[in-house]
Length: 252
Image 1 (cartoon, rainbow, N blue to C red):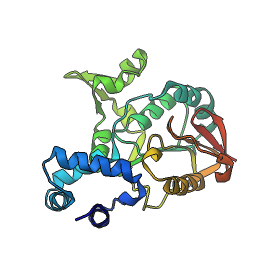
Image 2: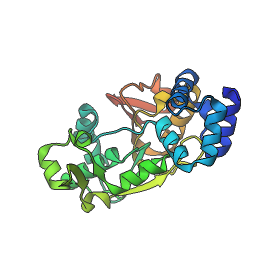
Image 3: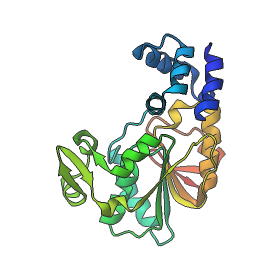
Image 4: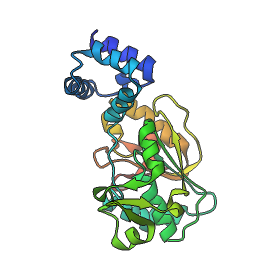
């Protein structure tokens, strides 16, 4: 089985279109996975994915690179805190963290909204990986994942158990988690703020453009779109966006 056949069969099996990702980077990662698990080749991996649901979940988690920590990139969160969140706050304000991984990003937003007494209607957090969503809903984190949380917020919104940090229910109930495939599922509409950080870098330029258009369409007029530090949007005006700060764009 060659790589092209493997991609087609994986798409049918787990609804993950590997053709949408940068081929050299993705193929290298999959070959590393095959070697790590002594699966010999693409055929061996596919057989394992078909018969072993646990291996299938681990493989998806590996490909979607679910790593995160609270308040990742201080300059972004500083701008969100001082400029964006106060401007969008209100009983109809809706926020979406797309590719939320283990939930650190949407929970960071929820903490800021609570801490600053900013009202909002909803924080939606989505990811393709169900295991990551389970971890996010549990709200239990290791010290390195909360190392950027200011001490006063760590004390106020977390409890500690067995050297882990457990998010308090007051934060957890602010976020609605949902499984969502950015490549195939419909996008909800009417958001004031959408964050999709460190996701685009794994997709081809064509797919990146398509996703940006869909995200912009999901924003309210003057809504904000936040990307990762390595995901500069070239010619944002082509998408109806204007750059307002580092990694942050506003719908024109």
